[in-house]
Image (cartoon, rainbow, N blue to C red; front, top):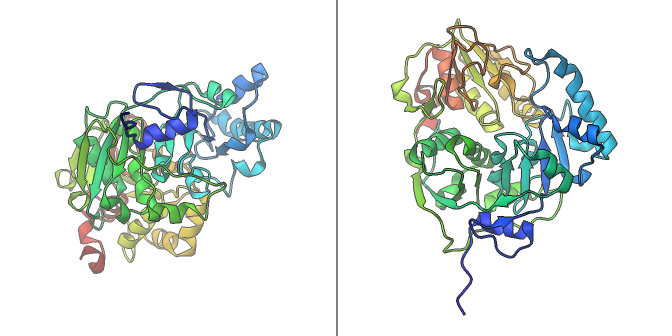
Length: 431
């Protein structure tokens, strides 16, 4: 009898959740969902209340207040949305601790990781395009922009098992280079290849990456064209997850001869800061190609770069320096927990001393509807660490948004033009 065909992490995760034993690419499966994580821009609540529907399992739904605080494009939402969520959660029996309200709030794909909801071996559905971020912790984390009502009603999701691509990571990232740059490197390298497949990571370079960096890489899935991205469960990841985990979990690793569409190797030591945009995120360029471009604003935050390691990197560059005259620097921590950590270790004090405006946790200036002082005017140019370069995303449709990492953002805020962070990093870091 022939040996069973080897499986990828994707196939193993979906087979386990569907109870099918196997889930080969192309098969139709109905995996059970372990968690649905909701931002505060929900619309399904109205549909549920109108039809008398109820969520399938109140213990598996969380809400994270991240977007809707004071949107200038829909003022009534700020008054209505949060009370509506609180009321709905209470009526559905969703415990108050699963509503990440003010003082505990943060992005809906950050909170599940940092507070132990998204676990290795699980299936997580997020109601936000960047929900793949949670794949950093060895779960199948898929954004669901459609079909949300059915998932919340039944607790499972209809899927055709996707093929997978193996991205092998080797080496270590240089100083001033982050997971965001790895994401842009993959966007360039795999353009036209990913096409709805899952990117699975392997290789010795993973051990050098913190969970923060892995999350930044996994955050890039939708931009690269991937359904999601999944990291394997190594010792560094498990030591992060175990003290946070809210229940037992069972990690998943690929079989040694798992069938990948292709294997692509990235030498992390060769990755350099990259800049995307404006207007088109697939327009990725070397930092050298845009050095010296004038700036009106710099934004540090969002789900790709608002974690503590990003804020600390920016603070390291800004320490003892000042933001250039005529440049607005706004910093938004990704969550209340990150804000508290950055306050406790002096990171926020350093950023404020340099002239940054630090806002409440959340999406911040990433899109113009959120509560942020950073609204771009006609003809202005902003370097942001966020996720989109679309016209009008941060204010005027006649403004330009370029995207880069937190080190480039901090250096550029000092210089007043797009700048290389290498000259601003402390001597020890540069070496």
